[in-house]
Image (cartoon, helix red, strand yellow):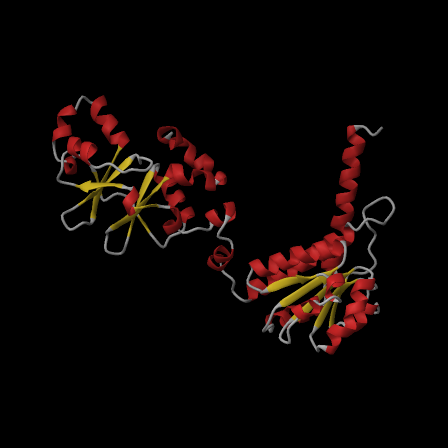
Length: 339
């Protein structure tokens, strides 16, 4: 039986082998890498990425990285390619092939057909002299790698290198093309990542879901008359006669009236005690900007306005808190007040 120290040493040894291989490939990167990037920058169609077995799984991840960073890409399974899927390759496409040995049977079988299509082939493989290497227009040679397992059999070091090269290609192409965070957000509308990159318009409570009232009404009138059917917010947006945002009044402001025994103000115009010219944000801003602003000024609600000063909605900290766990330390001081 292995004890914990021995198991930890095994893990470190495997990781270090992969790190060493990556460092070697990085040091040996040559002009062929720049040539491949230039080729991909000229792509008019789709990047078709193919590999068999573990290399195929890496190919699918590389496809996902290219596609999400602005380069149309899809995966071609080499075994399915000979049964009709070669039709997925168009005249304007390019092919990226992954094979450590360069002699994978399924890969070698489809190379003549792809060559006849006169579609450029880029290879990530051990040697330019392999079957795959000789068929490719450009090769990123990774050399003969020692796999990380005890028997030098399980694809590990080789797949780590392929993945790193794929990432390097995709992200280099993306950077040179000027791919922006806005573009990234467009391709990632769902999940936590999409929410982090979202705009205020997507995460705010819309106009109809916010409590709004004229600023000449009394506090008592407003709390009794202006209700919203959905989840209640802790703030009321107050409007001047022209309909522009003139102030904000929060539950905390109401609590302070009672704490100071100023109940007589409940029947006075709310404009006398509201916060005038509150912090606001544009509907075009990112949600991250809104949360950062709320954290900086320790506020729980942030009105969203247009260029004319008319309210369009409101960001409530309770709606977006979970999107940015890395900002929790900044937000903690006033989270308790919101809960």
